[in-house]
Amino acid sequence: MNLIEALQSVPDYRQARGKRHPLWIILVFMVMGNLAGYQGNRPLEEFAKRYGAEVARLLKIELDAVPSFSTFRRAHIGVDFAALSEAFVQWMRQHLTVDDDIYAIDGKRIRQPIPDDDGKTRFVGLVSVFAQTQGITVDLAALTTTETSEVKVVQYLLEKLHLTGVVLTLDALHAQKNTVAHC
Image (cartoon, rainbow, N blue to C red; front, side, top):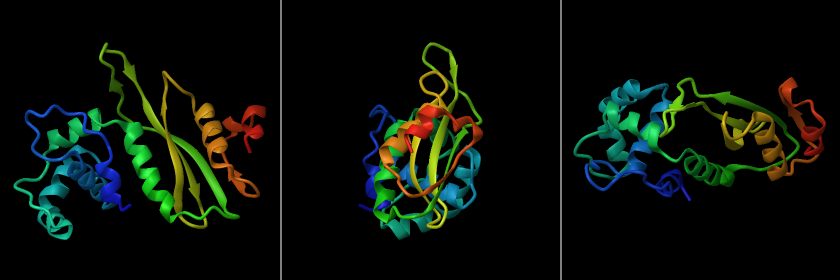
């Protein structure tokens, strides 16, 4: 599975009316733009305008137009973050060898809050496990302030990965009996 196939597996949240671009193309621009340092909706629009023709040529696809600021904004709000994360992890695992490595585990929150349907604000974050020697992210999981805590997400990732004989670096927040039991 290549990255494009992984992104194509993310379910499209949009209604059929008004769709100009397949979701996977928007996600490709988001990934490529972020990797090139274009972070945020307006910078992603600039990236798409500047490099859209080259991206289309490399992917051997036809693009009548590139995604706009509002398209990127709606995608950031509407995409199923868990499905996108899982697709990314599935693609990434092909390039991973779990060995005697040093793993850094840390959580980061997205700066902008996301409003729920009922108007309440929630913050979304991501906890990642980074293999320092290999220089890759081994796994990641979503974190929301209303549903899970960073401690529970870290415990879930440690249980899921079954890392043994490795060095883990974590924040002091995780120096708890329950977290250590998952190591």
